[in-house]
Image: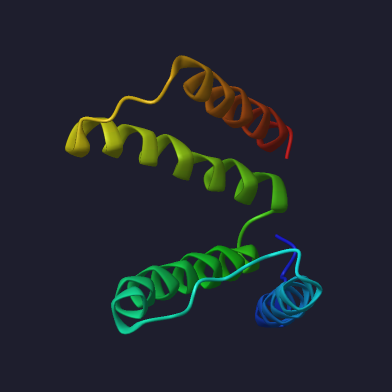
Length: 115
C-alpha cells in the first residue's frame, strides 16, 4: 500500500476547483443554469449526498489499496449500474456501451494484476 493520508485534501481541491471553474463559465456566459426551485433542490440533495459518499469512500480506500487495484475496483461500478438498470428498470444499454465498459474493466484488471 501507499499509505496515502490526504484524501480529503484532494476532495476539497476538487470541490474548490470545480466550483471556481463553473463560476467562471457561468460568468463568461458559456454555461447557463436554470433558476433553482425547491423541487429541484429536493431531487438534487440525495444525489449530492450519495456522490459525496462515493467520492469520500473511494478516496479513503487509497489508504489500503494501490492505485491500480483501486482503479480496477472503481471500474466495477459501471458494470453494476448496467446490470441494475437492466434488472430493475428494464433498460438495456447499447452493445457499444457494454463493450466500452468491459474494455475499461479489462484494462484496469490487467494493470492491477501486475501490482
